Image (cartoon, rainbow, N blue to C red; front, side, top):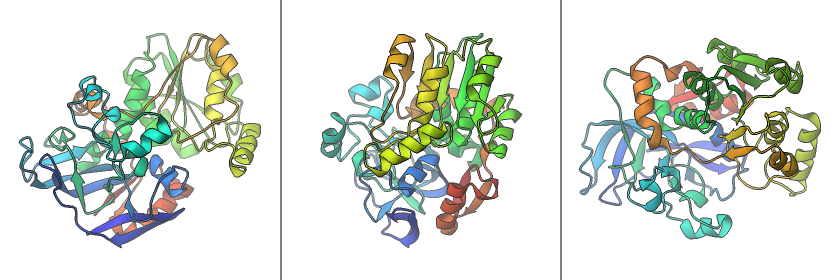
Length: 389
């Protein structure tokens, strides 16, 4: 089959690779009908997430049609149309029984490697480094889905792939970011980063009843998309984020702040960007926490910081004293996709949100390497890319 394969920094290729096979009775094989390039994939593209190996198949936003099932898989049959959550989970362990699906204790087949780095294991992920299991990803013609009897989302009839695909990652990720904020009717929610996940977080905060939602970015097309949902926008290259937030909150600051940027933040603070890039070049830190620092500074005392942007390693100069003395709370984590599936399917079916709004580019899988460049460079006003094998 054909797949998008990682060969090193900024080197994704459209290669011929072996077809996946059933390896366990609970497995399924799907023929991929749609997949997407995620902002998290760019961290792999830039080689800032450790433990990738040349030959790894990438991609973790995938859906398709079941073409084969394992002998023990009684929940699926050939012909079923499913969305595949980006996290792999057994459904039976201590964490899964508590809805912490991204922390599954059984799905990371390289758990010993991760325990050395993290202290404990977390769950397996599709197409995302040897630390999270080294599982082949879904930017491919076919995908093996482990624990497929549990880790699948059955696609309701009457909806296109484009409307359902993002149940695999960016929609529940944005939703979890907003839920973690414990939004109250009088809250102001500020979201940094208006890429695909940020767009979902903005719409989720609005659906959850925030008094006002503020979107912070610098790209006009992203700010326009956020404004179309009803968000107040701030272009950080043209105005002071601190001054504008104070103006919008009577000087009190937003009660809830969401980091939808993560480890490769840039531009939000000129000195911080220079400092972080210098530290990265000297191997003094791996991630750029510009957004985290700014959120700590501007958040209203007693507020909540919700982090849905990915971080991969070490950060420097985190203002712990400000964080502690302001009594802030930070909530983080890879998204527990299946925890939110029922709520989000209802929202889609009720017409409250059509996630396909975020798609700006569609292309054949064969053009994937080119589309990684377009997405990375934000060419042609690119916000979200969907690939069709």
